[in-house]
Amino acid sequence: MTAAAVQVTDVGRVFAGERTVTALEHVDLTVGAGEFVSLIGPSGCGKSTLLRLIADLDQPTSGAISVFGRPAEQARLAHDYGIAFQQAGLLPWRTVRANIELPLSLHGVGRGARRERADEMLALVGLTDFAEHFPDQLSGGMQQRVAIARALAERPSLLLMDEPFGALDEMTRERLQSELVRICAETQAAVVFVTHSIPEAVFLSDRVVVMSARPGRIAGIVDVGLGRAGERGDDLREDGAYFAAVTAVREALHGGASAVPARGVETR
Ligand SMILES: Nc1ncnc2c1ncn2[C@@H]1O[C@H](COP(=O)(O)OP(=O)(O)OP(=O)(O)O)[C@@H](O)[C@H]1O
Image 1 (cartoon, protein in one colour):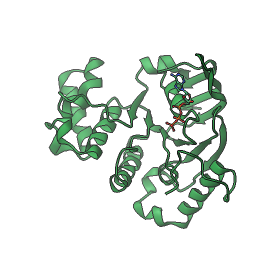
Image 2 (cartoon, rainbow, N blue to C red):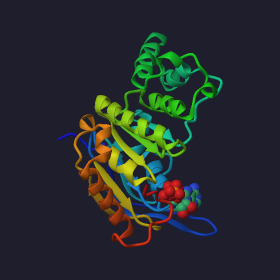
Image 3 (cartoon, rainbow, N blue to C red):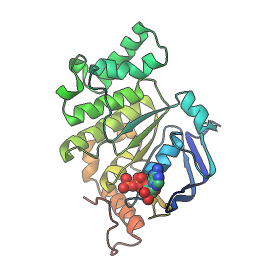
């Protein structure tokens, strides 16, 4: 049996300080290879903290995390995953191509191979004509596509994304969601995706993990079941099964259809 992309076992994260904050408590989660899982929940429930723990940018105070069967630290050193955050985080003095090549050059990939891979990635995100542009010459959505290309350049089997489309307008956001679905189908990467948007989580995911307010715990998991990434098109957004899944996530979040919406979650 192949190892899960991510295995989170009874994880807790307590931030000690003047005021002790228990950000996460008893979190158990398995993300299968090639599976797309979204994390959704009220503001401050620990979504970003959980993602940072998986990425080994922070360490749990209890429990264990493994990525493809190895400890998170080893997975980070082995470049098992790529990361894309809300701010594209591109280097302004480097061209689009040079930004995409950056992780490859940091890890000693030769010039020819780097160039070839960057060309592939540029084509994948539809930015071939913008290879020699600088980030400030691109729109926010294009910058975000560069960030996704950069995250995928090393062919990670896992992509960790923290609200990568949060700062974009609704139309651009929907377009990038469709692109991400296509890219995932092509690369077969597993994804852990943090979002505040229920429709976004439902459109993208195989499963939506609903977290409760602090201390963050998993309150429920909605199996979206709308088909594999490659089979999903834009018409899905008007499908009855899609609306049913949106309702199921909303109810899991609010503990019932009539409850008050949780702070920090978009239901549009
Ligand atoms: N480095 C830190 N030091 C102290 N407390 C922290 C630290 N990082 C996060 N926290 C606290 O942990 C809790 C969870 O934060 P986190 O950013 O993971 O939430 P989130 O669900 O991603 O929130 P949002 O949806 O608003 O982005 C918050 O109460 C936050 O203040």
